[in-house]
Image (cartoon, rainbow, N blue to C red; front, side, top):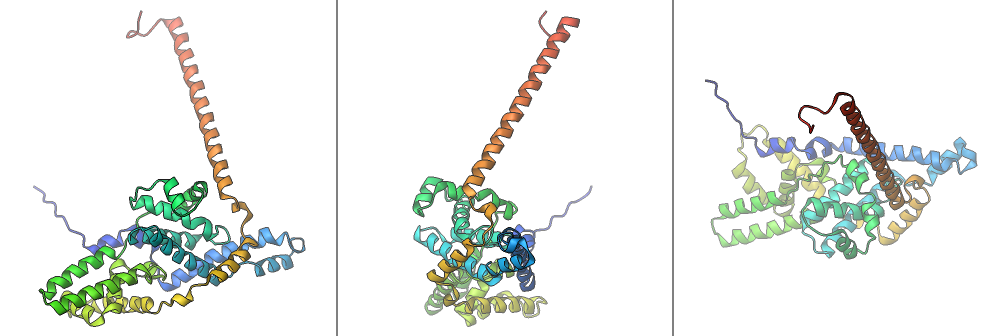
Length: 352
């Protein structure tokens, strides 16, 4: 008799099997290289569609066209600004943090492989919000959502399939919020009812939660660190001695991976703590960048609503053609069956 042994996967192993880890986790160098690649490809396309408009499509025209395009840094700053717009909008319409967190991660993932010059952020951010509302089971209708943010429903839906493609149809976003609640429960158990320590833990938890609600969403920590590293980094910024007390109880000093774990938490906490709200571009700066963007954007994506309508109409026409083919085949088969009945008589199981 053979026995089957089963092994329970721990949280780290489960996370390493997630699409977030396999497709959306990077080293700082990999992340920078991917953004540079996306920008360079968009710039090369812009030189083609703008170069022909300047100096007859010559090399000089291509160089002049490139000078009118957004720089890589300008693209990144515009994306970051709209991440904050997403966050503020989510708070304004009273969404729970995990919903607009998902929307922001969709937005950031989209722009890892797409340029602002191809798909301007102001046309994408509403779409990722509505998509996140569905994946996070908010159960809000398109019309109600559109009214809540003063948007055209058709404009919200038009880029949705493109967004899904860019996300590789992988919509799972692992977040640190549940882990932070778990750490809170563990710390409260360790406090054993000591009032001052309980109050300190609750203050640290709230400070860490605030960091997850803002700094974690407006930096690159989701691309560079795991959810557990992010939550411990937030606690590290909120109350370093308290986190040390917690980790000393949970991570044995002789654990081989302890130095690496602590180094990752420290590195992530530096990124969270160093975020400066003033680094976000102002409303006027955003307007200036979007004006520049209008002069260099890809003409093939200028009207996403029209493009979506054409794609839908073509799909309907293809469906109608397929239906016509199916009906023709069905009619021919029926005719052949009738001809066979006339030649040999009906089948033994048929009427006769």
